[in-house]
Image 1 (cartoon, rainbow, N blue to C red):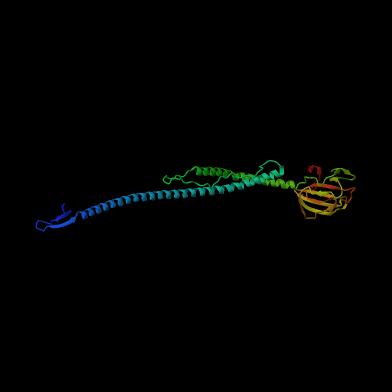
Image 2 (spheres, rainbow, N blue to C red):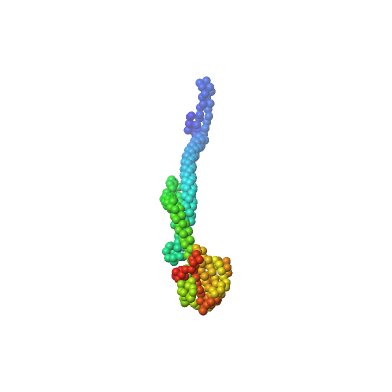
Length: 315
């Protein structure tokens, strides 16, 4: 290449071999400078483009890595939530079982308080239940690896272990309570069917066992105004309700357990044969029917057909 300062152009000589003709090419200085600048711009642009591609590729890889970390977090959380849900459902099922056992305790306790008027729980018995639906939060920094906190799961495990321990003891306790409840119900039934209250109020005018001429008084006479209510002293079934000679209007009630009670000289009768009556039900009123010297109630208690002193059954 030869530079001609006078004409400001370059001459390029091209020689293929020793025998070939020399070829000449002339390029002006301005064109050469333009080509040089153009090539520099192309090279710079290509270099910048390659650099940007490298940077973009690195950022893309970082984003892909971040997305993969988030997917791992989400999958991990879904697995843990599934485990927590399973444990929570198991705990809730065990809680329901224990609540059924506790309901039996409440029934027995209420029965005892109804009878005795004391003791037992004053409020409903409940199983303490924490919030089993608490959310597990993901860390805010997306570049940090997510690790599940096991504190909540350990709390569920502790509750589950406690419920297992209670459930292992509950069946035996439930059987015992069921037996106690049955015994209590049997006792209540017996008490309801045992003459154990005053049939009416008034003045005692004749006691059991007093001799009256040729016979002995077989009951208890309680004097009061005509029309005073007379109540059955125990639950049972009416065996007789009507007129009976010297007893006048008379009611006989069988209570079971070999107990029978008699109510005589009534002015009115409010029951019929076959009626089931509850302890305390009004069955008639005081009167002076039959062989009577004044308005009063003649009351008898019989056990297995044998008259007993009514005072032995009164509170």
